Image (cartoon, rainbow, N blue to C red; front, side, top):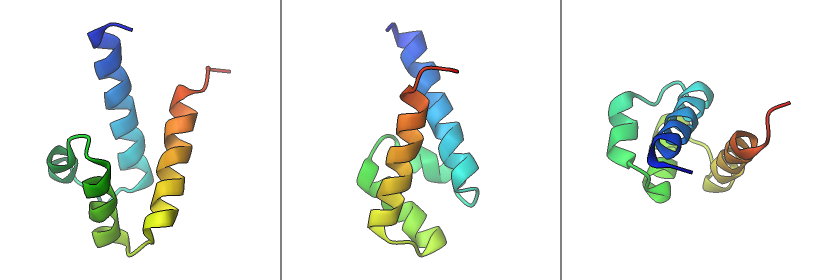
Amino acid sequence: MNSDELKGKRRQFRGQIKKEWGKLTDDDLNQVEGNYDILIGKIQEKYATSREEIGRRLDALQASESAPPR
């Protein structure tokens, strides 16, 4: 996978996160910049959801991104 493909995947995942948790702003996601714990904290701030639930949903999003297209 080249760097353009990697950047594209990252943008797609970021879009999925915004779709799932619409209260997150671009500024929120820029502050996170790949830090999983900060992302979970931001989601907890906005949605008052448990870390475990957020982790499960993020894992599901990531799994759906890596699944081959149907």
